[in-house]
Length: 445
Image 1 (cartoon, helix red, strand yellow):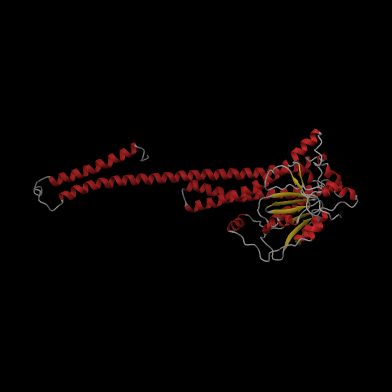
Image 2 (cartoon, rainbow, N blue to C red):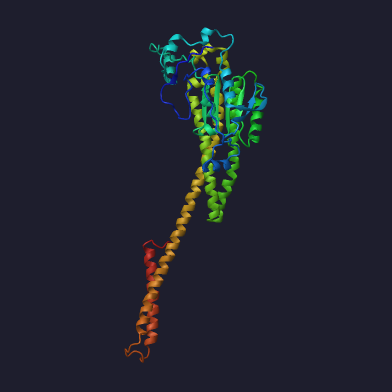
């Protein structure tokens, strides 16, 4: 094959989401990948506290690092038969590069880029919406800009393979990246590379139940021989993700409901409040995970070019379609994605409703705490009034108890009169103070 570098093409227009990558960017040829040095860490990456807390929430998590530099991959063939194999990043990259090789019966003129493309500087490709308008209106683009020519579509790069592992991924946000004859899906707990005849699934830790569901889905979709393999693989992956999210919600919701009911019926309890806080954090993480996958699928549906680039088998058999993508009808893949997008959106709605229920319970608990605090403040006001009334009686008793001659020591009736007066003042001051503060709204009924 020609070792000259392909032109660098980047997608035009602002990207609709930072977690989705426009695939129409060309980099070096496969020989440049072979000259690159693969850097591996001899020790596994240290996990932060947030990552450790996330491990407790979800059953399937990826190993943060591998001392041998190899990862466990489950390979599914066209018949849906799984094979476990340890592969290095270089082996995975080589497999994707071999899948991107042109068909044997393709003429060199069709697969090789034009001379003008070789010598021209990197240019930006028009956005999918702009290109679609030009194609629908039948207008001709400006000279020097090839709107739909993407024969130099970017192949899978080594950094794309590195990002499939948590140790080298900057963010855990879900991503769907379309490359030449490859679809890279990164949506925890599933990370997979879909080719036209094989699917590579990275095996996370503790994924026995998840992998069993995935195997069953691949076997089920393998019966549809008329559908391309990449569509069957996407259907199996999306169906497994949808079922995984649903099972996670079914595991979280009973505990949350019990905690909410105990708070409503059993009164305020610090232990139940701690449980509610933990469940709220778990629901927040779960909702963010589901919403990330939903957002990525919606961005993919809005990108007309990437939808057509998902037809790996058809583009491999008919490479001329790369220069005329709009002739491909993307309705089939749109229906497939929208079907599972509805299931994921339904699970996200359930999680959102549960989050609202937790927020409402928190508001009610805060109202109860405010009521208790106001009650304690009212009790404090009453005791303050009583103390002030007693202090008046104490003052009178102190005056008559002084060791001074006033002439009243031997008088009859003064002792009883002072006692009755002191008690009367105490009672009148207490009742008057309570009624006054009630009239002002300080003391609630």
